[in-house]
Image (cartoon, rainbow, N blue to C red; front, side):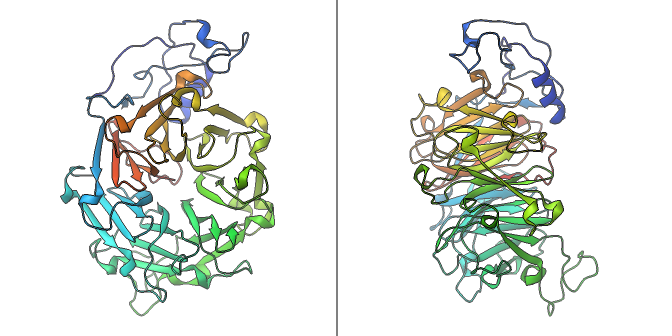
Length: 488
């Protein structure tokens, strides 16, 4: 792997760069030389004359001992690829994933076959990979097959049920990473049928897209049920100890029910009861105090049914209390702010990944009001990526300790876009791109990403080719609340 040690000229580094460095536990970048030219004006980054020029930071500046790789896909060896379809038949279509401290899991989007890679051995060797068909797990409706995202709570990996029209669209699958049984043994797995839940008085819940953990609860993100877009969040108490033990440290009594299957540990809340347009979400992110639900499609009468309504939960007041929930029509911030998919958090800011119109949004969590225009910034990714591919569709975002990555998600579109959190958000110089299809023709159309402390894994939607980027050395996970390396 080659890391850049080039010295480049940077523009004025000031409060913005230092503040972000402090939040990420990095050293602030050194005071650079100043170079001003016409590129700092309104034609290159949206900065008008008389306005403080943007902060741009060298790749090798101020990283607190960490070295980050350039994004380019040259012969330096930062990118590697593995075709999961070579493992076995019925493998290769995924949607989201998770990291448990050693293994990266890829959630199957349609066929029930979970793939797992051991990050401690060779990525490109078939022997490093294993699979398990969760559709073989017993259930009244047949085993689960279709998932959209996964999340790790410190012990268990949860696979999020997606298809609202399938009989198994209610079934959550859970893998116990501490099980003495093998990954490929049904004894390591369990399922829960959400159709048993009706805590909000409505029909059974199904059709989710992503999940988030706050360290106590796992929140399943509502997407749509068999009647259309849905706003019913389902929450599971993941801290309950195993039944049959005093502290959860030992195996459960075989005769006692698993906590996963106890309905009282599950609850739901319909966000649409607070805002009837707050439905149809795609992914969520936790910032330490709040859970943000990312708007995708609510089927409303404007914007072709795309949603612009961000929902935010502050759980301290109670999950089922309307006062705990707020919403924001983001078109009041930017007229193009509709149709997002996935988000990431860097210690201060929440980043929403644009799925439809290419406009990325950033929210400053130090501002307690999500409807405050001063808390938001927007950037049109087309300014740096249109020449690489006209279909600017992203699905998921990821953070590696310094950079935010936006995951390309359209057929034929393999342009990864990266933002440097040490630089000004809406400055062109803060953004870089790489078109992976120039290296591997099948490296396109991804759904989500996973970070393991060193490598970023892009989750393939249809082509089966996992792309892995060697982003930083030495390996270290960002010090974020309830951070487990999974993004969606």
